Image 1: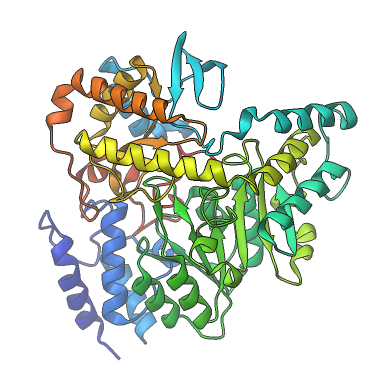
Image 2: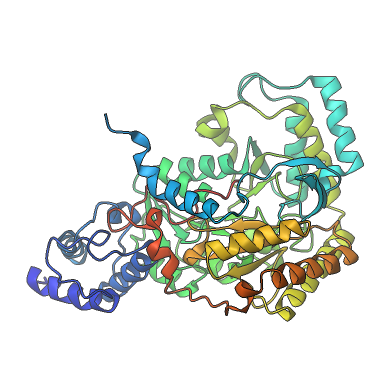
Length: 80
Length: 440
């Protein structure tokens, strides 16, 4: 099982290529508000996360995820 | 009091800014008189129609109109009831028979629109604990069907076979799965690799639904669509279609060979809880569907038109949505909404109507001048259309000399249009980009 801080760091690495504004990333960073991602960026990023962890993040789940912290928790649960 | 309309402010402001530039509102065109499938009077001016879904030109077919008039006399103006109560008249049964003949399938069910067909079938057959796997560029009616049902929704990159396969393999093997695909994607007019996608879906235990709204009548040997053309129609579980395109009337349908299909008439809410279409529409539709079975000459001419327009526009320097003509839709990619609206207006001044399609109806934040051809466009009309594009481009030279580039991965216009921005990582309440301006 992956440790949460380890998971957060992994996700941070995946976010970086999409983090055009160089926003500082923490648990509370929001994808829509802070990172200002549009739906296309979200689609590319989600596919990247899914492929990295060999999981599926359904759109139902995505609708509930607003922050990097929430994503870390969700991915941890899925890979567990 | 919170004004419930404040959520629309970004769109209202964008619209006001666009109209402030002096362009005609592209979304409030009225056709004062329709002369034929390809010509109408708009703003008092005779205008060639290159932005309808009237692919086979059936709207003015003598037999189609005569059948409708007869049904008016025989059955009255409307049904005033649901299909399952007092709303099924003889023409409703007849058009379902015509569809079974057309597709050579066991069952056909007619809905009031194509939108409702997707809404009803998808929301009813995929329930709690099931998975719907869909192309990210799916039509709004598909997303709305997903949202109305209780299934888990999984999206994959547009037309990406590998992305579909990966996701299917990651889902629980025992779970019910429905893969939803379209034959022709209506914004760019591109065709799906159905043969591979259907095979992979079947190998992974999924049922397959294909929306063939934009291919019926002219793709495939019998006009049954892309699945027929690619030789995989027998493995498709459900085909969704519409009467409001090649058939030339209004209504939607699903055809299937599933042995239990008829139960849907009792459990599918968008079928049960709405009024059945007027008998005149059903009689016209039945006649049109049967005539489309013998439309191979018209089909060949429509393909000629599509090839000529695609090559002609490319030669004029326009950037198009597809490398090759794949359907009756040819999409011209414009650099942004303002330039797209100006070119649209210049074309209208030349007497040519095309669809201005804009985000969020379009993928990758693109602004498109979407041209859709009709089998009734004559070869001369297509040349005339190219001439009008050339003249409109000249009167709008600043906009044409800008290089038309598009990059599907990075769209700057999408990033700056407020209504596309996501709430939540993504919100299924904002189903991708297809939820307005693209009516079915």
